[in-house]
Image (cartoon, rainbow, N blue to C red; front, side, top):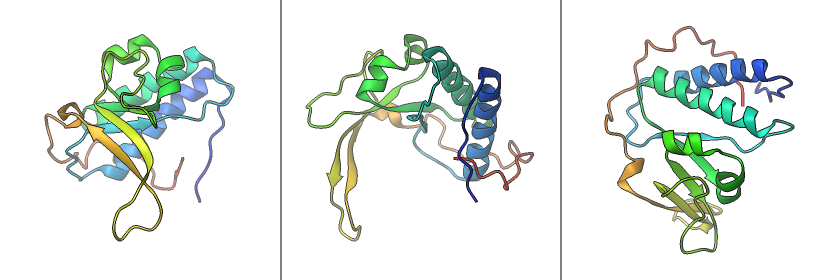
Length: 162
């Protein structure tokens, strides 16, 4: 059974960000991704901007540390402009969703490595719509080796958090 977490204090949210990062890396351990690992953080509840950005930083740095892989922030254009701060933008690239425009609004980022320009794509053999994206080579990992199976052995597979 999956659990939806509701955060009530920053200390708890920081701990949960670390737990989520460990769980994420435990799920993908042994794989050999060729693209940056993405954080998609969109539901903020009653969190302040400071809390959102601190949680994001903890999650991203923990995923990077545990996996040994570079990371990216996936965000819609509004959140890239109004939620995620310049400090995050200076440390991590953005993959931004902004529909019906020729160039996305990058917010605090000078440029993007991914641009999701539509959610109405079609692919043969797939029922329903799919996202359509442009990517630069900045989305690619400089080290596309396998993620170690040793780094997350202490994470229980019973904690299926979302």
